[in-house]
Image (cartoon, rainbow, N blue to C red; front, side):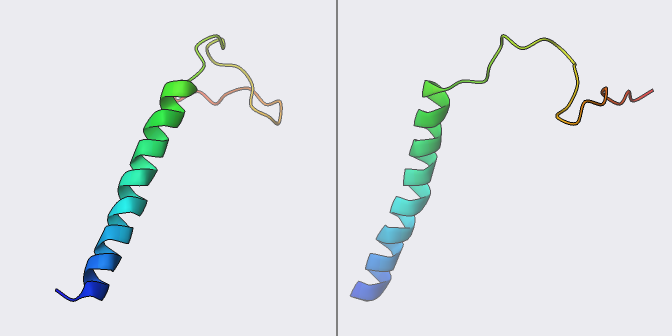
Length: 52
């Protein structure tokens, strides 16, 4: 492999694995909120649509 190919491979791996690590850190610091009630209205004020 040429030096250019190795550098491109390393940059690609840093971008992919760095994005995964950043996502894990972000999710660990700010987990999904659990204090919200079930159901509710959307931003437009309309009630949720039932599947039945």
